[in-house]
Every structure is written in C-alpha cells, then in structure tokens.
Length: 255
Image (tube, rainbow, N blue to C red; front, side):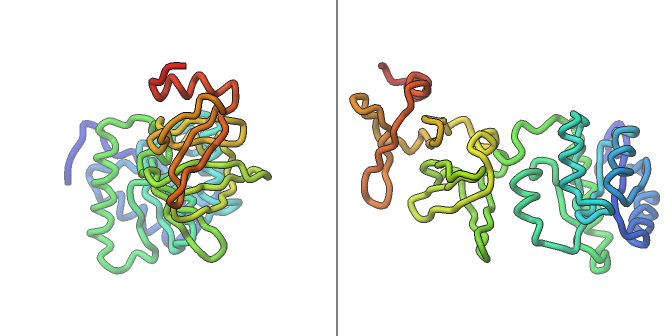
C-alpha cells in the first residue's frame, strides 16, 4: 500500500454495531490508519467529526436518526470540512443522490455484507483515500467533476451528459426541465442550484432559462434570442434584458 507522511485519520459511521465493530477491528490492524472513533447516529457522528476533523470517513447511508445525506448537509451548512468518503451500504437506490450531490467526496463504495473479497476491496478503498489525501483540497463542484447527472423520473433513471444538454427551463415548484435533443426530463432542483453544479459553459439567459453556450448557433440581436439546434429544427430562446450583455461577453460577441 502507498504511504503518506501522516496516517489516514479515520472515523467509522455505521448504525449496525456488529458491522461497525468488524470494520473498526480491521482498520486497527492497518499501519497507515489511525482510528479516531465510531458512531451510529447522525447527531453523534456530527459531533465526532467536528471534534476530530478526520481526513477519511467510512460512512453508512442509513443511520440512527436520519441518513448520511442529512449528516453531510449539516457539515456543509456549518462549514465543517467534509473528508474523502468510503460509502458503505447494502442499498443501491441512493446512487443518484450520492453521484449528483456528493460525488466529489465519495471515493469508493463498499457493498455490505463484507464477505466476498473483503480484504482486496478494503485495500482498494484505503488506496483511494490515500490518493485523495495527497493533498486534500475542497472540491470545486460536487457534480461537475463527473460530467453527468443521474436523474430519476418515475421508474426510469436517466443519465444526462453535460455535453448533451441544450438548455434548462424552470418547471415551477422548485423543479426544472433538462432538455437534450433526445429527451426532456423533469428534476426537482432549482435553476440556481443546478447552475452551481454545471460547467462554466452554461449561462442563465432569463429568469426561467439557462443555455449551454457551446450549443448556440447564433444570437438574434433584433429579437434578443439565442438560437439552438433542436430535433432537426432551430429553437428560439428569449434573452432577458439583464442577461443580454453578460451572454454576449461570454460568447465574445459585440453588441
């Protein structure tokens, strides 16, 4: 295993005591690891992380008093550094939530129960944590690193690549439509929130619209609209007055 100047200062958050005990015992056997503590509830886990400031976290999704996402949001809201994470879970329905909102922090998954090839899987997880700690730097964007979203709509799970997105349109009720040339998917996220997680090539052009500038064919300066290709035709999207100059500057186009 690779080595670093300082050990992996780990915290284990797991609500099932036998699993938590087993994982902690395995970690204690590893030279590069310093086990700082273990907890099973959201509230106790938050206090432990604030107190110890670990640089590695083994985190179960279902916890006493809530789940991993509530814990991570609490840390983020209170500006507590979130360390690189190994997510331990027996459930895969949470994958979209993890990828979309916390993907920059999660370095590996350890599927429970830890039975088959557990030694190899744990070693791979620790290697990923070691690599993430050389050095630790706060992620710039929780999603942008991946280049895609997973969006659940009904019984379907859609992968939306950033490069395929044409525009994003407010759907009301705190949701947006993601529009590609192929599909339109509704997602419960605000326009401002999704723009925080997209590359800089996306610009808001009105209160209710944002576009992928790489997809703009031309700007209609007379009617103040962005023209995009869509399903073999041209789509006109109106540009709000307060957004017009910024869009032209981003496109390096004169007035």
